[in-house]
Image (cartoon, rainbow, N blue to C red; front, side):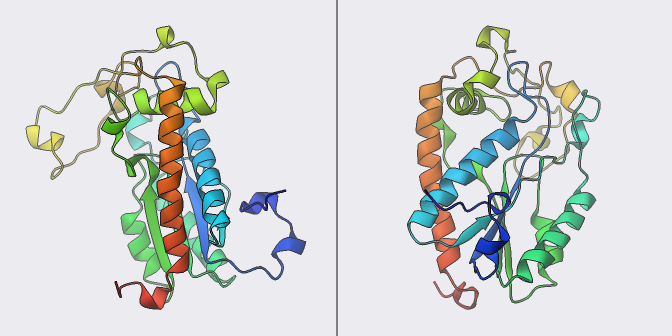
Length: 255
């Protein structure tokens, strides 16, 4: 039986004298994903991806522990959509402060926030919390940005698109409605052109941008695309986890 890397599956007997190099905090969201994907899509995807990636990393010697996922994310632009659960950045800050204090007190010196939701942005939080722990490292990654999606999908989008639909069709086909029930994911852009580029930003009001809550056409999705993307993604992420675990904090900038 393979040894679990997940805290909620382990017991005190196993953990009492155990040391880990990295604690991983998965973070998702609870939000509408077009008409055909479940509200928990970000959580379902993120949990399976980190489970596989951490297992691959462990098999190559990385010592990591995966914490329970935080299932709510920043959805301030979607509060008028029913049952979208919004978590403010200030709440995220409080959670990360407490989690960092807990894992660092156990002797772990690296915390990775493993993000699966585009509305979450942890950079300023990491700066604030990290300033309290000069000897430890806090970092984050967005798994959905780890690979170039155009290498896998015909019509990459942003939300409930071909990528997410393909991934869910592979991982949780029982939770995906038939694609003839999905919206087309068409969306509006800002009239202020700079806001459609990378150097200017404003939050989008989701119900004004999209009719079906999706951004990107899901109708070209299939499980085979999801399987290939998932397998390649987990390989890339496992290498990142291995490198993170094996690099001492004191040598982090000596490349």
